[in-house]
Length: 113
Image (cartoon, rainbow, N blue to C red):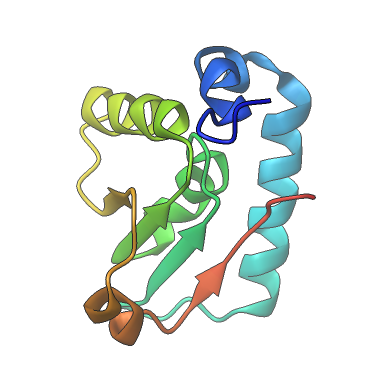
């Protein structure tokens, strides 16, 4: 496998069509909400966000959610979903600068290895 090719790029377009992934994302989001008090103005960072399944469940509870993924394909699908849904509180990034790292206090990830 070419290390420059991210295997998730090819899976991105059909990722959300698997209902098991949506169920898993909702389960993760529900567990986060149960354990983390979402206060007004609360912001979060999701690393390994993929197409944003978890963040779309959490988004209505958050002031801002910064999202990052190493897959350009996943981020392309995510950006399309954000535009099509007229979502204003989700901010996808392809890399995290040191300035962003200092600002991020509440991080989540549902990535499985």
